[in-house]
Length: 131
Image (tube, helix red, strand yellow):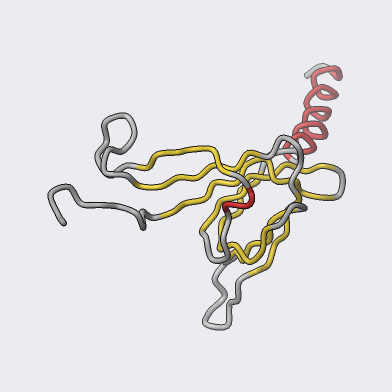
């Protein structure tokens, strides 16, 4: 095998893992706090037995952070009855205890929230034909 091929393969081993470090991450949990600076959630990590506790994680907003509300509706989306409909929301729409998935990207030493998906199970649903 030529030396240039070995050097190229070794270079890939050094470059590829560093690219993985910049990948987005997703964290899911219940909202503990949300304000104009960011969001704090409690996320259940790996199970280590009955003493396992949720982990608090705080993520900062930036100008491009999207907040999306997903809620079930009887019409659904795309013809799927009782499916989830998505609509834009504001950080002020978040309430303590809401279940969210926060997609983050590393920015310097911090993780910044790129998208926050809030899932409301459908507390405002009406069953057709019921009163």
